[in-house]
Length: 475
Image (cartoon, rainbow, N blue to C red; front, side, top):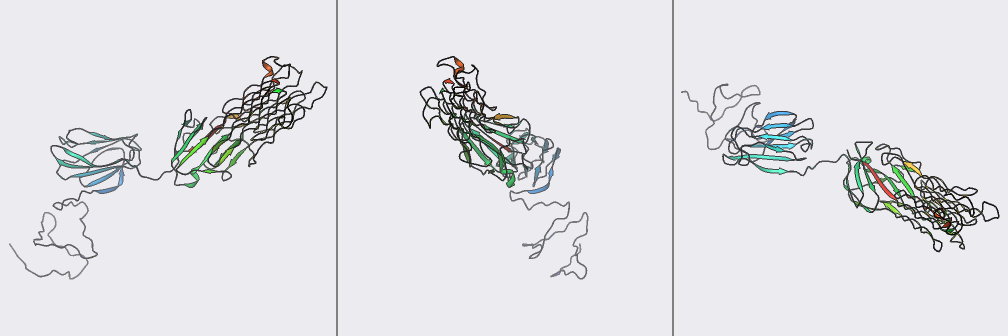
């Protein structure tokens, strides 16, 4: 045995000092204190080398190349990002040695659809049982430590918080009969439909600002049609629609406001939704009612203006202003002004003036209510409700906002007057009092905001309730 005693070994040339004899040799540094490296320097294990005797501090070295589909065997002291977006993964644990530690994390937040199976080695146990376990929670991360042969591997840390940025909006709805569904036309779009009051709650938003602009349709309640002799049709509820073309270019109505005009940019909060009820119809001794407002965020649609009443003094005969105006009742009474208060694009149109009283056969026809797409239509013997407009915000084309039909002329043919396309109720004819069912108007269709039909020589009908639809990308 040879022995050399020195105080220091100093390298004389080159940049590498080699101590030891190479493969199959052992170098022993025997002292009370052994210092490796220098201040600012680096001490490293050679590629493929392993360490023993230093122990671990309860941490793992994370391998930053994700594991994908298939089976692999984990190494103690390592953590793995497991990407199951392409299929399930099986992870075999190493042989259990006290203090061994392994971690796994859900790389793509897909474990809920493609799970990870963790197998113990041989007769080793996981939580006191020799069996496999399944990791199937979205965004989960777990750490296993081998304790002893009784309990085997024990999960010491488990996170399911899934903290990561959102690429799109995540939201929920509340309220009876309100729905939130994936659009039949588009797999990446959700549609929230409110047929009554409720809440639209944005749980989280996108990191991309443009993705937080939602499409919307806000339709107010339609007004009731006027009654008595030659009543006017009820005006349709205000119709307001918005769309963000670059994000979600659905087929909208002619009244659409494309972003940034009237855009609703949502934030993580709760938005109360108001869906306006339709106004009541007027009877022989009563006056019809205006429709009620619908709201979502900064958008308010005004209820339709009531139809004028026949056989009453002005201003009761006149149609009232609103989202769309009501038709005038009995002898040249004017129709109500639409788009009141004014917004751009306009939310509705004006009701028709009633036919002047005269000895001709065209006397006493009540005016048709205004619709979201057209004014109440004048006519020689009757005045139909203004047409509504169609939109495919709900994935299929639906017309809403039709004005209520005015009444037919006194002594005219016993036929109902057409309401506007889009839910407007039909108006009655002006026969003698109590002259049959066609003397009364017909109610507008619910959740269209249509105006109620006028009574010819009977009772006006109720307007239709409104609706609120919100459309957004969720993936």
